[in-house]
Length: 275
Image 1 (cartoon, rainbow, N blue to C red):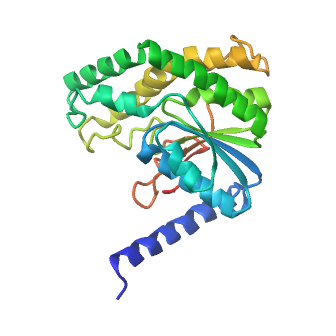
Image 2 (image 1 turned 90 degrees about the horizontal axis):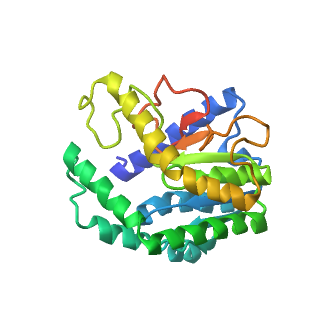
C-alpha cells in the first residue's frame, strides 16, 4: 500500500502532466521545452519566499539552463550553497521582521491590518532602508546588464518594479506569485477563509491590493530604475502610455489540483503548480 508521501508525489506528477497537456494544446512551452537559455530571477523575502524560486532555478539548471538570482539576505547564503549564481541585495529582511515583531501578524482583523501597514511604512521610511533600496536598484540593474538574460522572472510583491529591466534589455519578463494574486471572484483574498467576504468583494480586494500595495507603492522605485536604464518616465519604448507595473504573464505557484484555476482569469495568468 503506497504511503501518504508516495500518494502525494503521484498526485503532483499527475497534476503536472495534466497542466503540461493543457499548455501543449495552447502551444505554450512546457518545462522541458523552455526556449530560453539564460534566466534571471529577482526574489524578495524570507527563506519561505526564496526557496520556491530557488527550486525553480535548480530545475532549470538541471535542464542545462544558465541561472542567476538577485536575493534579499539572509537567504543569499542558501542560494549560493545550492550552486546558483547569486547577488545579495543590501536590503536585509531581518530588519523588516524585527520591525513587524511589534504587531500580531496572526490577527487578521481590519484594525490590526491598519496597524501592520503603519508599522511597515514606518520601517520603510528609515534612512537605512531607503539607502539600501537605492543601492539595490542600481545593483540589480547592473546584474541584469552583465548577466545578459534571455528572460526575467520577478516576484510580484515588492519586486514588481523589475519589469522595466526587461524593457531596457529587450527581453521578456514573467511575474511570479507564491499564492493566487490576480483579481478573481472565485478565491478569497489571501488568508481569508472562503465565505469571509462576498464573492463580489473578493475581486475588488485583489484589485485594491495590486493597485495600491504593488503598483502605487512601487512606482517611485520603478521610475528611479527607468532613469538608471535610460527609459522614459511617461511612455514605454513602443510609444504606449507608461503602465507600472505592466500587465505581464503571471505564474501563481500553487497546484491547480489543490486550488482550481479561476475561470474568470484571462489568458497567461496560470496556476503552475508548486516549485
